[in-house]
Image (cartoon, rainbow, N blue to C red; front, side, top):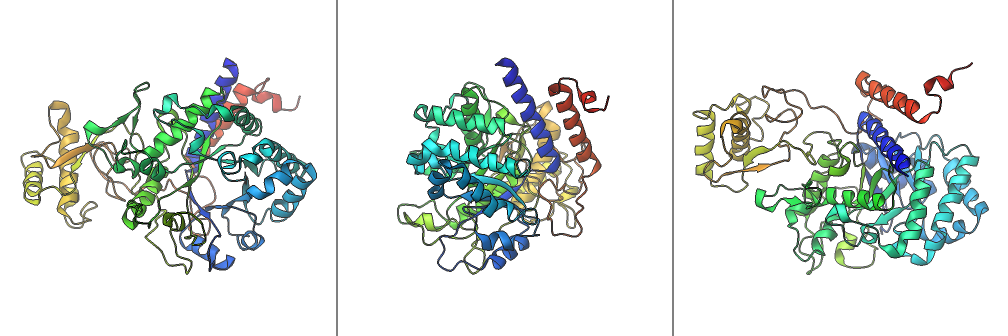
Length: 507
């Protein structure tokens, strides 16, 4: 058992090396409960225009799969909850499903995974007894078609199957589902697949009875006296999103499995709600999604798995006005059905939020008194000896041209240089510390992992997914990434092959 757990940890590390080398990605879910759903070709045009490189479908709609052909976009296709019973009871039905909905479209449509159902254990528990059978039959059909290395099989889970997710270190799955979940994890392990998690800080906050502040759910920095810390591991959690993902990792570990990476198949925030849903606002939705993208594209994992990036799919592309339930259920979309944006969406790699950085930055408090901010800025750039060249007109950190932005840069430069000799982050009450990197595009704050030791500046590094349709992007791995991949491959061969790499050579 110890050897298996060690090997699982090794494989998870190798997965992390590969993923970090290729770059974490942010994808999007495409629901279809829309009165005036655009034609599939228009939907793909929206995806391309917004550089979206990964999508999840809730079914295997032929129009969408054809429209996605030769787009380069990676696709998760879905087995609907209604289809699970039939597939789970019949290997021939599973084979037919694969032939019709997967094999018929490969390789021109880049299908990379099958999501078997959606939150089956909590949404349709009557299908749970055949869920693992359905997954196995689909996988065997892929093997028969020689597609099992291209297409992985998994099933998305709701956070509710982890009844007490905080503190993450003590999180476990609902014991009533242990047998089924154990079989699912064994399947994922045996097929080198991944755990699909639907993680919604919106619900964690709104159903949390005020235990956690909304800033924690929105990835906003918390004051030092309100930091969220796991009392057992002393890990600091800068967002509820990270804590949820780590709770799933710890729950998997509690069943003695390791080496199974987690992909977040749904996460988002509603932009409009009813009278009893005051937190469903455009401002909160835009803040959450923008910060989620930054968080994922920093290429790091949660505290317990820092080397495993959290690939994530935003929920969702369109507002699904036909969905039942409260008003908010109909208003999660980033776009209206006519293609216009509810709020801006940027999948670029700039402005990345550091998930769990050990670096502490000093920034201006939002809403601080402007006169005190100006005095603090003047002092930092003068007597405080901060290097304020970067916030001069025409320099990398001049924009946004606001007092708060300029003060943040100056405060932080002073703090990074003077903290070791007693410098503080106070500035007459106008400053606060944060572990979220405030760097922005080409503006790199002193102390940022992407800045030079002298506080200089360098172009932003594209850690996110490259646009496969952009002719300027090369499909060839850059040298450092190639070396990462070669090192990871060699490591696997050395440690898991009985005769080492040489066993592959002809005798």
